[in-house]
Length: 110
Image (cartoon, rainbow, N blue to C red; front, side):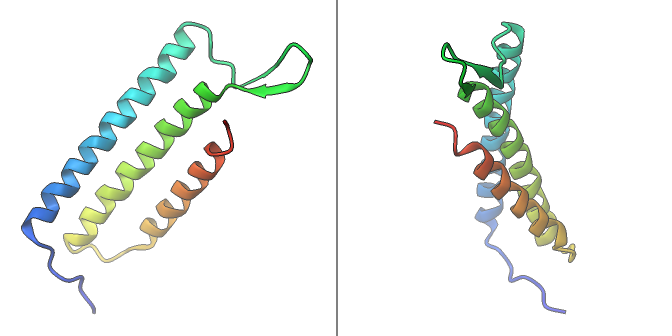
């Protein structure tokens, strides 16, 4: 069985710092989402003055930020378990695909 090469000791601390940054992104986007719901400005889809469909980009950005950061945190923690010797990498591929779908869904709103 092929094992991953040993990582330098400083790479683990950098990866944990990146996880902490994504936790901050998750908390800030979750706070923004909660604030939009609390002030009754959470309208995902609405109509403008001419009757055309419009999307609320602020709410969509908060939703995408919350989902993407939580999936990325899960992905980074899963990579840490793989480096610790857990050999099943199928979930990592699924999480990478989920991250792509979330970014693709949220990127079309201007």
